[in-house]
Length: 342
Image (cartoon, rainbow, N blue to C red; front, side, top):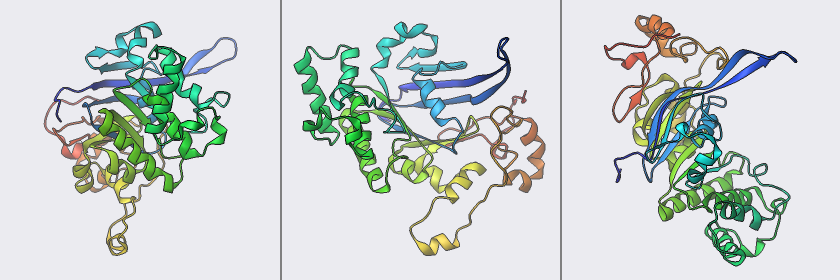
């Protein structure tokens, strides 16, 4: 990395959603542990891919980083400022313009009653980044051109655009405040395959042009490999492996990562026929009552193949360990004090 100091540091982030029971006297009966102790860092100008099955806490993590969800516990530090220590929207407001989000659904994230020009201009007006109406319109049209949209369509409404064009509008809106960090929450999952590559290339071009830093959330490992510098793998609210994309695909360490990569199709039919496909047994446990110890132990093939670690898998929480390639698995644990599962 050109700058060794991280732009964003996430330390033991937790996001729990309470479940209440009772109409009159509501009481908390359980909690959904959507994110439960996530730690990582993102450096200026890099893209960190965040992958995992649906429901593992990827999108919740992204929203918690931007303080759209106020975390239950943990720290989120952006450019030296601990965002989780700031109280109220007024204290967070100066940092909002530097952190933006591209949402998953291009059909639901745009106000159908606003023109495209007003949608892109709204962040400019909110943060006072344009001197007057003419300057605002000039910036809006420049953003549209930058994102591959015809500036003559500035007075059209979202329903008059295709899915790919709507996502470009969402990208232009995110760029309006000239941010430093953008959370891309599965920005291509709702698009046709023919359009996905165009949006990916656009995001990469914008990153080079503007020096952007991305958290790229997806469940498509092929797409994540294409755009990411490093990749973090999540399972049931926890990060189980972090590495640069080349190391992760060449030598995945965690059994869950191996299973994910084995499911990615290979264009060469001869290689595809000879490689081993890892099929996981059972379903993903509920985040309301996650397993003790390693959360993957109920489906882990390595636990069955290595009975010497089976007891630890059930009772001990594995630490995320290592330097450049980090993994949370007892197969690679070292002899140091460990945290017992609650």
